[in-house]
Length: 246
Image (cartoon, rainbow, N blue to C red; front, side, top):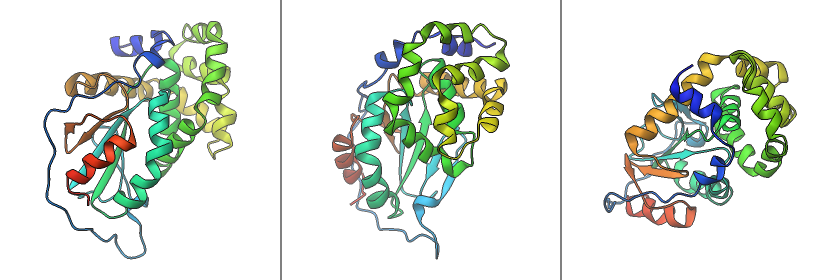
């Protein structure tokens, strides 16, 4: 077990809230000329174009969009859930579908239950990653309540062999029923959660990228590689427009 994975599995559940809602540090004013819309290929929508990036993120939109928006998010973070509720529809309909902006979602892991959720949203087809993540955000209290009400059982699950840890955690949390109602079968979910190499990679990527890019909390947004001072749609949209999405 790597040091990173050991921390992800052992992190107290209180870290879920402690690491959420952190403000990013803006490293400079983002200004750009207005960019033209880029039509999607005939019969397609940019919102339906999904690319898995070399940063293990899932990007929707024009892969060559001149404005590249990245969000580091935790599926257990209330501030991230608020952004999804307030921002995803206008972001996709007004910006991603214009071809001017691509949107990439990357996971920052905040504890073992977050690691289980990040594994499950990757378990279906690539195009399901963002819709399933949005479903977790929209039902976050429902998803997390069993975790906080059964912390003893969660801690016991982490003492099991590696291939059983997240499988058992998901049982305690009721994750199988939640995802089955959204098209991911329990058998498929169990198989994904038993893959130690897969979930170790998610945890390691989270730690490495957080260290390299100074991602101190969630949500953290980057525009063309530059962190911006925003953790809500109301704060982020004007920055996108100053960057040229207007």
